[in-house]
Image (cartoon, rainbow, N blue to C red):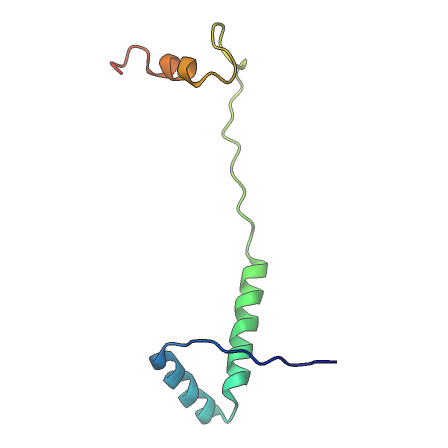
Amino acid sequence: MVTHMKTTIEIAPSLLESVKRLAQREGVTLRLLVEEGLRAVLSARESRKRFRLKDAGFKGRGLQPGVEEGRWVDLRDEIYEGRGA
């Protein structure tokens, strides 16, 4: 059973140097800090609320007489009637 997998990632040089210094200061490996960071990101994103679009409907009676459902031209004309467009 495989418990670890090797992979290659590109990290900005300045970030890598900062992380290496932190690892040395704390006496831990770079791998440990990378894994800790990835776990933190996963946890934060999993705990975020999902976006839900607010129901912006209103209590109307549907389409007005003379407007066929699905005909954009008719809807556009009704919307802009009397507005010079």
